Image (cartoon, rainbow over all chains, first blue to last red; front, side):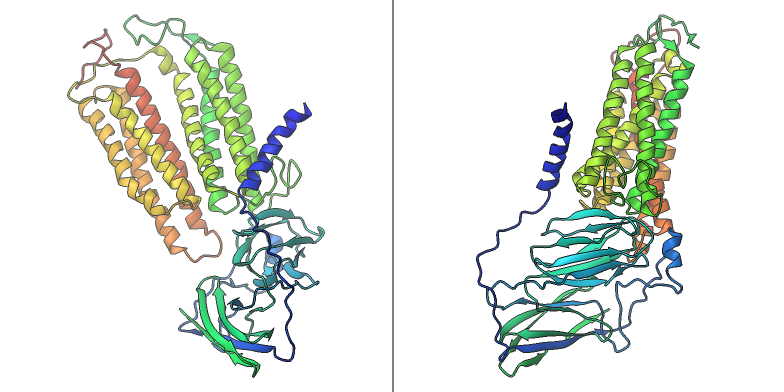
Length: 249
Length: 319
């Protein structure tokens, strides 16, 4: 009888597993070593030209508890143009050029918070193998759906005051959305990088990639609406190079 | 309480003197069809509100029978509750039919309906557990439409009118209808499948839009053939007019649904106007399918193959 009951579950598990992309086994790479004496910094800003699109205020009325969390209208963060004409929430990373090596992820977890029925931060960078800590600071139920294509996608509920969730992504993937279907306006993006040279632009629209070994690199900027832009640069022993990206409406 | 209607020998040979009208069963079948239409609306709401994954577990919801009905959970769990109700109603229907009905094919239809609703429940669960793969979600949407048409057909078959027998008329050799009548539901099902696939992001909506003139044309073809050449048959005329009317509404609803999608393309959450038009479009799509199936049934019943002209006293000559 137990076998009969278990059979559909086994079938479901098999179905679920088969829909996920297979993880490639990691090659046996040496641990990366950066000589602090020669390492440099890549800095820059992401400019935005043209009229900044007007973002709509989110309608929280489907859940009064979410609505109560915001005293002022909260605008969607799809496109946030800063006062200095730069673009916020752009994931910038070294796409190519680094020597083949294994970069150990930091011990501390990256945090994704659900607060006021909003994901914070809106765009999050994380390293392969690094822990992602997911918090629910809201008094409402959320479901967290990682819509990754390369890493295994998952969808789990997180009731209020539930224990923090810890997740990990083992493959490079830039960017994929994380959504909540209970509150369909909730959307954040995660970029999984194989190395620590990534950043997300903030209120000043700049980015800084520190401790980069000298070399020629392809740096990529990725925005959820305006897409990808690439730039090639060479970081020499002088230790500093600047590159700007430009998006527009 | 059963009311017997005696059959005259000239009526449809597929109805027999032992066929009996059961008012309770008929009313129950109508109730089942109405609940199923509500279920289609609820399913449409789940997709349009992007609430399909708001309850990650199945068959329970957040590990409970009744989770807090907030946000998207209201739509997803509400859909599950309605589906459970329809499932139970279908079981009652099947048992009722098996206990009372003598028509063997109708008894089988009751069993098929139950199997369909079980399959539909499993598809619904699978699509949640597998994170909405388009092929399962689309199958779930298509089976919903087929199941609704089945319940409408069951209501038709258990009606007093059906049991009373058919008024047959000769098929006009120059304007054959039996084969053509089957083309409409096949095309409508194809169009529903394209619409469902577009909603679940398997294909672009251009395919659904491009096929709409074809399916509308086929419906016009069937309906106008009836209205022009079989109009003296009241039931066929009525069936054709109903199908035409529903299709007319559906075309405009489709345009409205598409325009609201364009207008709210950059919206960060489902907008009420877009949800309203899309869900009504889905519901009227189900009605279009059911009306085309009902019309095909009416044609197959009232215009039998190889019936000589003036099959009996009540036969109506082709117009």
